[in-house]
Amino acid sequence: MEKKPLSELAPAALEAMLQETKAAYDAFQAKKLSLNMARGKPGPEQLDLTMPLLDALPSGASAISESGDDCRNYGLLSGIAEAKKLFADILGADPAEMFVGGSSSLELMFACLQIAYVKGIAGCTPWSKLDEVKFLCPVPGYDRHFALTEYFGVKMITVPTDENGPDMEIVRKYVENDDTVKGIWCVPVYANPSGIVYSDETVRAFAALKPAAKDFRIFWDNAYCIHHLVENPKKPLTINQACAEAGSNGIFYQFVSTSKVTFPGAGVAAFNTSKANLEELQKHLGIQTIGFDKMNMLRHVRFFHGSADEMRAHMEKHRAVLAPKFAVVLDMLEKEIAPLGIGKWTKPEGGYFVSFFAPNGTAKRIVQLCKEGGVTLTGAGATYPYKNDPDDSNIRIAPTYPSPAELEQAMELFCICVKLAALEQLVK
Image (cartoon, rainbow, N blue to C red; front, side, top):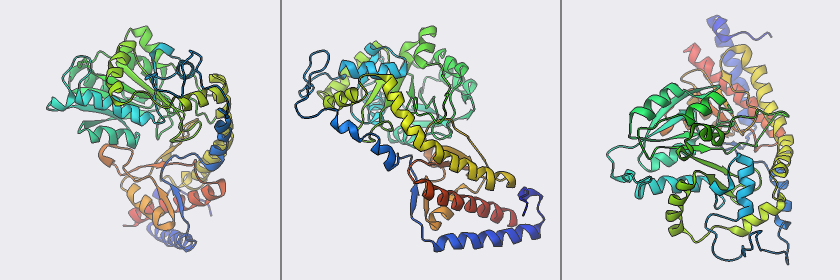
């Protein structure tokens, strides 16, 4: 039967389709599926790609870094030189402006927020002593970013985004006129969850900001900068280059990790900022720890032979695993949802997610139906501060963990649930 936009169907046809869709949903419930797509976790076959990392430091191998330091011992708070160079090459940064830490970039973000909150940065009053602190949050965005600022009691202000990134007129208005605005969350390459890549104009607009607050910082989370799904990916302008042109190097903290390159939770994380910022932050980080896991840094450097190109080649193996999974999601949405006119979605060229917009007022219902049908998704509203999507529309789809066969089942159920929620709304 030819699929038509639901808006064109007569009430009787809508009712008939509702009953048909309910029957399809009941049939899925009877299968008793148990699939989890709540987070963007690498699948087992991706983790298998990295198992040789465990042999990168075999028994008897030298644990001495290129600079002559023994990685088995205390010291080197900011990380080993060769790890700084590896991450700097990935980001297009200066190794002298790199700090290499533990396994989690979120931990480093938390530390930067905590230092500003407890001690203050750039000679400014600690945030904890201020009446109000605000952060800008491009939406839809990354739920864990929002959780960090909410933890510190920071007031979050949403900023709409399009295919070029955040609305920079809104960003500029807040940043340059309100000294209580202390930061903004950014995922500039394959944004979570939309998969967009900030345009060069947007990156330059960030670099050109003239903040009212001396302690304003752009939290530039470059988590997916080499996580491509296409053969010839975009080559966006780096924040380092844009800020060098604008003379504003100290305005950003840039974060990166190997969490979805090697082992999540057992990789290496790093951040990049100006030398002055690094010097200030290290005074506080040096109280927290004498040094992070340098053996793991060394293991990663040797696994990739110190080469950013080898890390990128490793990510081509990930692409071979992930691209077909994203194709399953996009093909199913195009086949089942597009003709009905009941949703829109991003078509990312990299990253870990597809951002789906259901008819307003149905996202929570869709997520509930999926869960009761055996597929767990990220909670509706999670991509907005305080988990409050005012339109109840956005759903983050994470295709990476299930097998292709499981993903086909999950997406079949998802499409049924989108239809069911839309039909329920229309019939009512």
